[in-house]
Image (tube, rainbow, N blue to C red; front, side, top):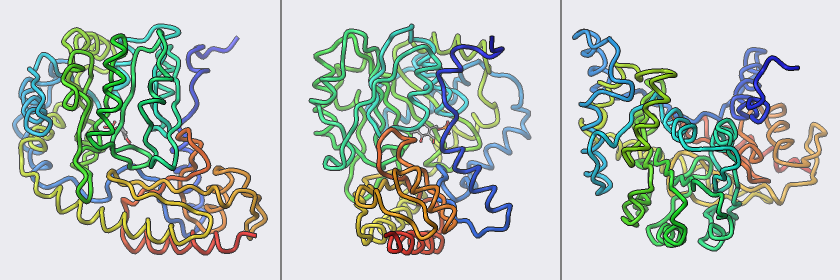
Length: 400
Ligand SMILES: Cc1ncc(COP(=O)(O)O)c(C=O)c1O
């Protein structure tokens, strides 16, 4: 009998980490590798936020705090939700965790029983299904199509809901596609949820601020206030404020659920890093103008990558509304053979051959539950992107 738990058998290791590891090994062996796999901004945490962290250390704010966050940060989160999303919350409805990841995990652990179903639009962020499995639930993937720019339809959501459905996980703009639902598109989904009062909404708004052109971010409880009492609005400072390593995420929702999440956190990790909490207050309350400046840069990179990848025969690359990812389809390349002799049987074979033959690291679509595609993170320099996309173009042109 294995020493390891049965629940661990249900979970697979993160495929994004596998790609990063393989790229690191090639790099260590002296190969010229360009990584387009990273899920984090390539710029530094803004100085005012770093200074707030330093000030917290100097002031001795280095001890334990309440397990789910200091009151000052909870208040800053309430103010942010009111200001940006028109949502009214009080601090007792807020939980702060070690990154958005812990928040989502706590919520699933706090609510799922064996056999409970969680509806997840695919392609999805890799951790959702495995977190559901670890918590004993059953992920139910709903596959979005390229034709709808990777957004699911109300009909698809309706068809996926059963009496066992506990949560609907919503993520817009999305990792891995960058797709952002418009208010009307989201209203279509919230209308379906109104008809199923037993289903709760876990919305992961992590990429809220990374939006381009005239796309306007919206979140379920704002679009349909009748869902307020069964919505957990999750967010964090990792992406917009380039604070991935500081590890602060948060959620706002019904008090009972927030209390249950606190219970889990208090018996696992206790409070998120005290210094990071003080820095997160500065992120939320401080100047926000650098976001627009960064978004100009991200938009330029998105346009560069979309135009270079769209120019490839057999590749279709929708223009995403937000985040820093594109998710091209390689349906037109399946069955071809690379210069190095690899048959492109699926997107995993494509990503592997691309890395081995050109040194460009991307994540294959199967990891995100929708094939045949791959994810490019454009959170890297224009020079890197141009070089990487040129190599992808040459690799594809050489397929026979
Ligand atoms: C959609 C989405 N949600 C949550 C997270 C987790 O964020 P954090 O680093 O704050 O745990 C990520 C990180 O990649 C993400 O892409």
